[in-house]
Image 1 (cartoon, rainbow, N blue to C red):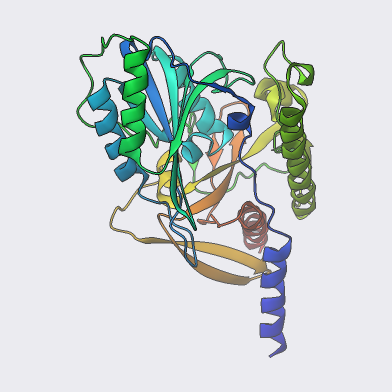
Image 2: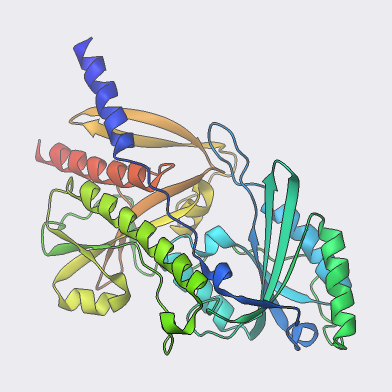
Length: 374
């Protein structure tokens, strides 16, 4: 009986290290909304980012964003908007390596405009928002104070009809004559740039592990808080305060790691980290489990409905958790800084929270070390 009590106490403690949610970027709240449509919307290519609600339940599941995207594409095709790529906004920001890959596609395909479409469900019904902005920044999607066109309402068709009327009033001539019939959805990019191993590296005790801090909001080059109104400055301050809380929790969890590590600013670049004698960097992805397995080049069995996560709670005490392939989860992995080799760990250890996933990864690594030494 004492064994089972200890087991459940430790399991509860692992979850209760506290679940601090990663906040959404504040970018949309920093725009300057106007009634002006980008003048080249009807003569250039656009990319669409969809923010669609998860299906709530005991475990949240990714909602049918592609079905929504198909409806959006039909409306845009009818109007004459050439939407060449569709992303789930959460997938685009699913992790540093993934964002770099996705951003490269957006910034190198002659994309002139970015369209953000969100649907939210509340007690009053459905709310839909459409935001259209020029694709101006070289290394980010949105710039503070950037001029943006916005529509808000409850029905997609009503909003696109309003968009069509505004395009007509702006005298924008349609020159988009080669719009694809079906939307192209992007969920995969080049995350794995070296060899990949479904194990832990054997030389993590050499050098230090770089653990990237959660990133605070930073201004584009040439801008600072003096360029914003007070309400927008407060939005950034609140966001950065939330990031401080995340990093405090990150520091607590990393105390469980058995070798040398350091919390670092990842934006300095991997070459700089290597020169500081770091050998590996700890990375994560946040997306539905199946998407993560695609990003990390796992073999995919598309008949599977669930993945089994292995949790090592203490020495030789483990538990298994069944999580839907469509549930957004976090998965940690380690990357070698020189040859870019990826080490995923010996077991699938993704979890519903970043805290749980990080604990799983560390504890499973410690268990692998013990098994190797026995």
